[in-house]
Every structure is written in structure tokens, then in C-alpha cells.
Image (cartoon, one colour):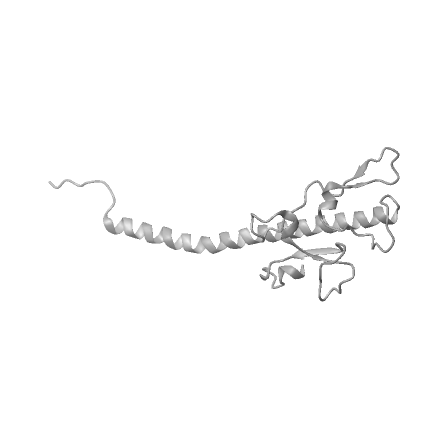
Length: 157
């Protein structure tokens, strides 16, 4: 009578390892695409938040809630102003108006870069086809040169 040992043979183990490695190589690109989609969604939300704050600043300036000097466009001089706030000209107690709690970061920028430096700026005086920084901040866009999953460069979003 022959005694059988219970367990897996070397061949069975190799087949299982091969199947698991094939599944892992299929799943890895899907994980990278999911991570990129999350970064793109974060970029969309950050751009929307900053642009809304810029528009709110301009509206407050047009309503006379922010003192305007001669020759100013009505847009903030830098992005930090949106967080630090400005004095409300209509407030008798000199209260401040805040447009952002914190300045969002460009998710494609290096993590050690301060949030305000992660964005490329466009001044009111620069044309849309050649955005350049200047005396104010009219718009922001990503500094990334990469293409999005939709084929459009992030700097054009």
C-alpha cells in the first residue's frame, strides 16, 4: 500500500505563480490610469476653485468692496491675496474679505513646491494664445507639459 502525501507539487505552484503574475501585469496599468484620472479630477476642481475665487475678487472690486487704485484691472496682484484676504472698504470695522481658505496645488507639480508656485499665471494684459504673468492674476493654468487622457495638454485646461 502506497502512502500519499497531501500538498501541492512544484508544477502546481509554478502555474499559480504564473497566473498571479499575469493578473498583476494586467491590473498595474489600470491602477496607473485610475491614479491619473484622480489627478485630472483634482486639477479640474483646483482650477475651478481658483478661477471662481478670481471672479469673486473681481466682482468685489467692481462693487466697491475693495479699494481700487488708478490703472488697476480689478484682479489680484498674486494668488496669496485670495487666501490672506483684503480689507472690506464697505465695512465700518475694517473686516477682511477672504476668497479661499487655502490655495489648491497643481496635482502634477512636485510636492515640495509651494502651492502658489505650482501654477502658471496669466495677466489681464496677455493674450489667450500666449498667456504670460504680469501685474495681476487674470487666470491660472497647469505648468505640466503632459497630455491628459483626453489628448489635451494640461496647460490648456
